[in-house]
Length: 261
Image (cartoon, rainbow, N blue to C red; front, side, top):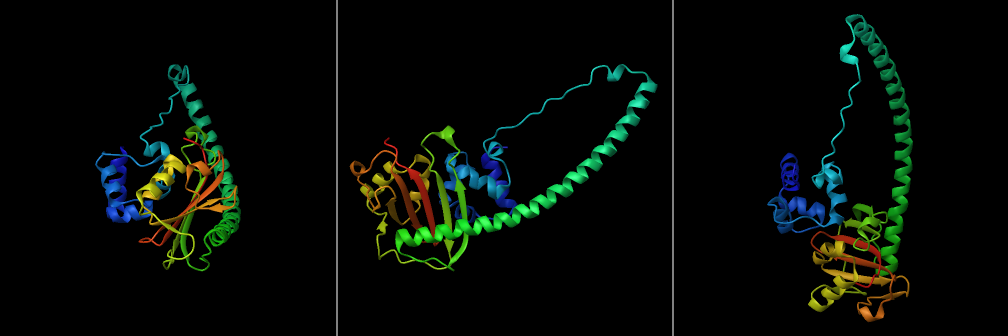
């Protein structure tokens, strides 16, 4: 099934408009329309998010079908009726044994999953607290007790895509807007500023910048803010771009190492 068909089916099954789906993916309605009409495709950075909300694998979203091999047992069809009957009885016994083993494994996996879920809740709380603390340190804005939803995507192991992917991206949705007219926020209205930012960040993070209203660029290597002049950046500077989408009351945090293009 093509990606366009997957998106349409997902929206229809969940009674979502193109605008609703665009909000989930942090993109514009026009982008959804293009994808559903086979006039474009999402950035690679969006496929993990698409996989999470649709319940499909990234391979399935990209149209890659996995085909299994059929292995025949040699001589099985040439056995006489007695051998077939004996083989069938052995098969029944084997099936019962395998079913019993499967039940035992299922019980064990359920126990492991419960313990893992408890650990994940603790780990998730740690990650969220770190994100909230980093936002406060970098922007001076406290978002404690205002977070309604959030997610974290780690791209650090996507080495196959070289430097086109960030290290990780975090999305934080708030229950009230923040004031970007104060502090170090820069509005994304000047074309030169936008082009400079796009030249700094990894290619597959461009979509998030294009749909944001304000930003702060943090250089964790030099401890400086909003150095968007390429001549002032050094190869492999540890950078963090914090974007704010006013309409969605959403903060997007993009961590990456600067690579000269």
